[in-house]
Length: 494
Image 1: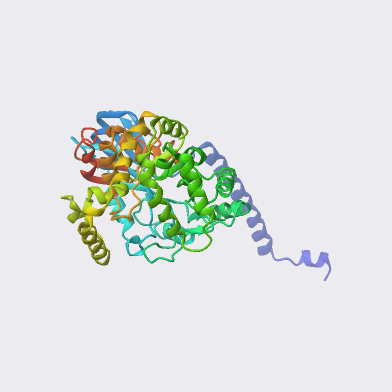
Image 2: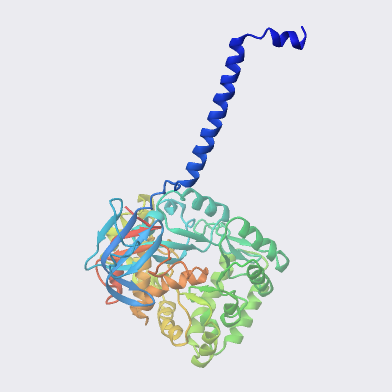
């Protein structure tokens, strides 16, 4: 059929329908354009995300480790940060409350930053590992530094605890030791916390592997040789990892110490402070160099037994001043709680039985057997190093050496969390002020990790790790135990 014929026989109904369709389409297009223009001229409405609930602590006395006491203050926490500190300000959006906020009347109570334990071992006794996080929080310890253990296990532990109430965990991975490893696992009483570093050429690979596995810093141990020590330190510095260290037995504290960010236990400082330190060092180096077969912990034990007490008895104040002056940028973590455990016997404290009930039954039985043995042999124990450790605190303070609070829990009957408060008491008894002791368990640990801008004080923008006390720890450091509430990462711990 031709085009003409097709047009000629098109139904009038179809013609009318087609025209109507074109008209409707045009009307809809005009209407749509008008709607668009109208919509553009109207204010846009967006649904705002509700602000996160706040925790508002009213009428509280703030004990800041830097600024001291501020009375009748308000502290506001939102999510995991402190957003306001000061007098009640009803005009501030930070302090205005609504139905979703949690308000705490803390009249007569004292607020301190969450405490740190700078020296713990989660894997020393795996019967305790699972209960340690809860115990730390119970005693207001909201951050810990694990200073030796299998890096893979520690990374897995931190990951597993991510969604549960737990302290912030920073770890080093294994103790980096020499050819002979003190904690190699050969002795059942000494778990495999250490590993050997074959030489200075292995240093960078060792530190790189630890960082890749999640370690936050490195820990160097006592049987490392000087060249490897320096190479490990150089690698850690290049990779921006802090260094914790024992004084290597082939070095002195004033040589090894300035290279590290922290030194542990005050151990081996006594040799450097002795009048005959050079002779003692030569003897020590010869003993280690000539040791070709045996166990690392045996070698270390023999050296400590042979030299520690003689070195303390040969103490030379002028020499020691020079040693300590070399350590003014190296945090000392004395672990007085551990160093004095055989002398001060924490298990005889009135509050020990109640604290010990939180331990697993098999751990409690094991500890009690050790306590019985210690009690039976107490007259044969030499307390020279315990007394030396306490004596040295005042000397460190005089020479401006920084001090951090750590316990080595659970080694030496150290109840997690509980022992940190004992450490604070011993630091004060040895010469620190109460405020200095709090500083050692809050700001100093944060400084080691470069976190002092975000943790350690009660300031706006800092982490909401807080401990509420019923009594003022500045008046008596024992009041650090009078805990009524603990906040970790912005949430109250039940």
